[in-house]
Image (cartoon, rainbow, N blue to C red; front, side):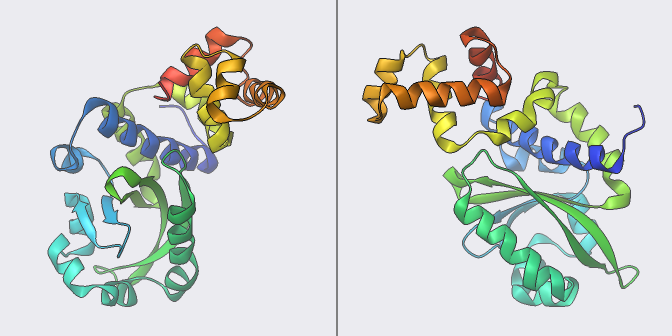
Amino acid sequence: MGYKTEKEIMLTQIQNLYLLDKLFRKNGCSFEEIVDDIPGIFHTNHAADMSIDNINREGEEYSQLTKEEINDMGFEYFLKYAHPYTIEVVGPRFQKFYEEADDEKVKADFQLIKNPKTNKYDTFFTVCKPFKDKEFLLTTSNPINNLEWVSTKIERIAGEEIFIRKNFQQFQSLTSRELEILALIAQGKTNQRISDQLFISIDTVKQHRKFIKKKTECKNTVELVRFAQAFDLI
């Protein structure tokens, strides 16, 4: 593995969570089947109360608590282990993100979490993604000094997915409406059919199409179809 800057390593963490999400959806893997194979700290939270539904062994080993013990503590767990800034500022950011974002968006932020072994705060880079059909949040959260190792391991699990990595930023830049129209384009729908289906003018469809091509850097419909297929829009 070649040298990566801190920014590149953090971007890889964001991409990796999207790839793990795709692995669950596309390959039909259950969280229970794969959770302990995911390196670093990985967990799923119920959106309603942030209780943990799944957490891998590394997560339990770091916290020195089982999933059941963490859930039994409830908010007391955060009061005991999370820095006040994490509770008052970062936590609400993630909650707001889940409430507003669709299933294709990913959010990253830094958190300060107390290490039970040292009783000192570790700086974590946390990445979160909605999984709204099951009302979950998917989360990877790892100390910043461990990110490169985690990135390498997740790449092996999720596959190289070179096209996704190359085009991930372009994909994230698309709005919900643009994603909807891109999916229809990839299904072979004409501008008129899209106009009729979405109750918008043909000129609006053409404008969206122009913006989509610009954002994705796709030159033609064939490239748009490939882009949509790679990101499971069709």
